[in-house]
Amino acid sequence: MANILVVDDEHGIRDLLSEILNDEGHAVELAENAAQARAARLRERPDLVLLDIWMPDTDGVTLLKEWASTGLLTMPVIMMSGHATIETAVEATKIGAMAFLEKPVTLQKLLKAVEQGLAKSLAQQRDPRLLRAMQVSPTGDAAAGAADDGQTPVASQAFDLDRPLREAKDDFERSYFQFHLAKEMGSMTRVADKTGLERTHLYRKLKQLGVDVSRGKRNAG
Image (cartoon, rainbow, N blue to C red):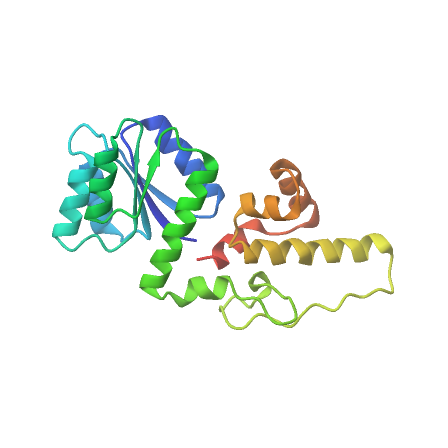
């Protein structure tokens, strides 16, 4: 799980981005202007910032410059705007923004940009907790099956075939989905894509199997 700061003066956009990112297993902090963004940046260093360009008090490019000039631009920043020119996007990139998203932001582009940003943040921080979340043992066991202390994942589960088919099938499916949840760091969107299931069907299936989705998200942090 990553800490993501969303800075946008539009309430609807903040809520939408927060819902999507929370669903991906991330902790999201919201700011509606530059003043709140400054406070959030000083209070808790985010792993990634989604920053709107046009805001009423201080625009996003100015805030980006401020962070860059004061040594606070230590995290990837993705700029967002529905009205920015190419020149503005180029300027933001030169200052230090890693990407630019045009509004309305599509789900696919958002998730791809966030994934790339967090990969960059991970490379910068060398955070072993996030690396552990993606570890898979040679026997195919996922990190979701690891001990709570974050050590090496447990050995691959042996399936008892001397029992009713339904029980054996449930155990296999449970391990299957736990594997993919850990591999995709708790992302329900990517797990649904990998397993070929609709998200609603996936949620229903995980609940039926008793798979703890929140655990996969914690392991991703």
